[in-house]
Image: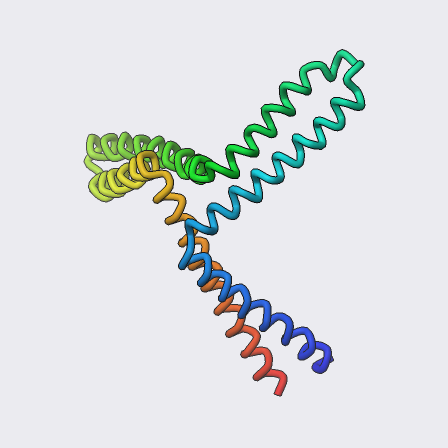
Length: 178
């Protein structure tokens, strides 16, 4: 059993080291990472559009497929935009997150006002947190690409931390097996 476990640990350690390197690469080049992700999504959408063209050509005589050509062309154009204007794609997610954070911040702000009216001492902390959250949400709304870079860097740091924890765990298992 120990020999089998040792054989399984070596690939696991190698993958953890590779994930650490990947995390460092992503952290050091977040813009390139966003570009690659957007291009992969763009090529995938173009591929789906091309499949749709073949389906349209195969079934164009059927009435239900008459609007599919518009959908297919729109899909291919969207894929091309994603490839050449990846900043747009990278900006959508932080904008959605920014809107959500702003919305939640206004709810927290209202909660702080209600707590103040009830003479609850926690109102001040909730007010500070809601204002800081609102600032973060507005930052994401008005600087979505910078927000996307921040999100990618955070994901890279989490990947690095996970990989390091994984290596430590595997080292502990190896020491236990000795």
